[in-house]
Length: 309
Image (tube, rainbow, N blue to C red; front, side, top):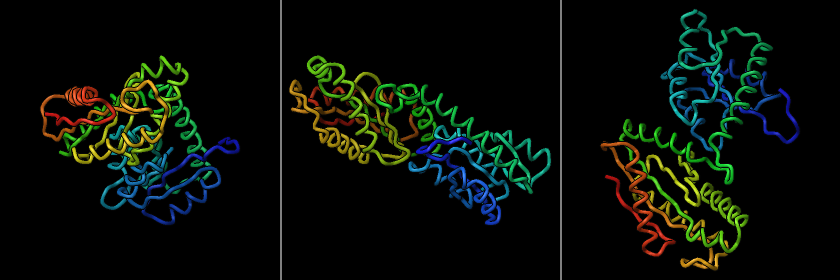
């Protein structure tokens, strides 16, 4: 794989419970790729859930204790946040029906042990190259062109995924709609270039203030942003909203034409739903929008909370 100086090496997650297999693969790949290890499915899922890890390919054994490779593959492919990571099975199972099952669970390749190292390396290179090209196309499709954070389309996908997930887990889901206060006046008086820069800085601040990998922030449209907090009840969501208010205010972007403060501020509408609940996710958005309206009506630069019924 061709790399230029300064480019980050693609990351390969090796999932295998046998140290000998791990050592062989690490020695084979480390010159060209960054490798991280998981010795069972639980460790692998934690690696995949980490905000600090961007996995480009998974090399997965099938025969592992507790959860086998097939089930781990299904879980990875069933999660909207990880489904696009290619999975290569490297296993001692050599029957045709095992290979067919591997492809049916979502793998892109199936290699039997003992394997030929140059062939494994060549296949890894091919699948990583394809993954990086798909990533670029995906970014263009789901990223907001101005702020660089996810766009409304991506938010709709993630919301539907999390809505379905909380129905299964019976855990709360919180949503926040965030509006930049008096942004039209900012644009009118400082110019659209300054307005664009303001939105970029606010988006970056919002994203940086939510460190959990599962938390999600997107540009909802215009000067409005949306945050999704899985497994977070009302009290936790309020604490996050307070942090976001303070984070944006701390930017101290001057706004002499605001009626809320002398700098850029935001208003936030917060809502939380706990299943079982009737209806679909649209009610969650409508409730957050109503809470946002209350924040604006009360003078802006504040948050309001309405429980989603």
